[in-house]
Image 1 (cartoon, rainbow, N blue to C red):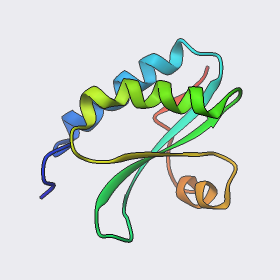
Image 2 (spheres, rainbow, N blue to C red; image 1 turned 180 degrees about the vertical axis):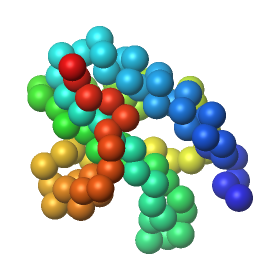
Image 3 (spheres, one colour; image 1 turned 90 degrees about the vertical axis):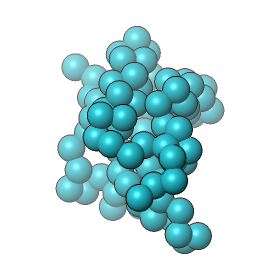
Image 4 (cartoon, rainbow, N blue to C red; image 1 turned 30 degrees about the vertical axis):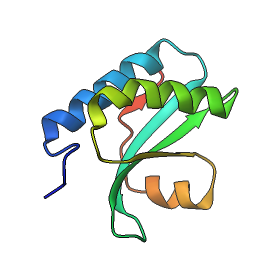
Length: 100
């Protein structure tokens, strides 16, 4: 019942494919996980957990650019791997992208 944005698996998969394709061309992105959550304000959002090297702002900007054509109205947040929250978010999750 999302108000616009990603409503189907196909839409989510298209976004993940676009982000993974972009990540393949970058040396600084190692692993990416996608998690869905409901924020404190009740809004559903997607979180991409990013294991990367290099400049975080540049990496996050590249991911946002690749995702933006597919994510519609549903917010996509990014958090760096290596925080307690990211560790909990990825504990039982399979990454959608992992560098070779």
